[in-house]
Image 1 (cartoon, rainbow, N blue to C red):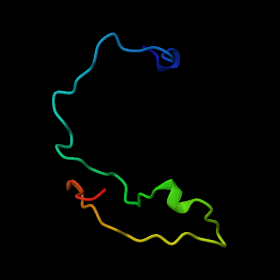
Image 2: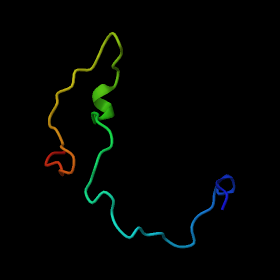
Image 3: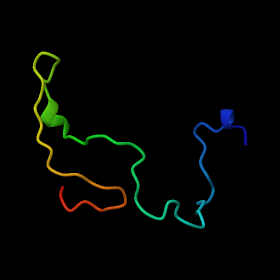
Length: 65
């Protein structure tokens, strides 16, 4: 089906991949996760200072929330 005519359409049945690739959870980007409320009101002249509470290595499930 041409992608241009697929808006508002859906599949009649699920498509399931035969294998998980990669076989572990993986982030494709480095970065930081913050709560929006912790940066509310921050500006270039009045920055929010945040504490790093942990680091998550690729393929490792975090033990903190």
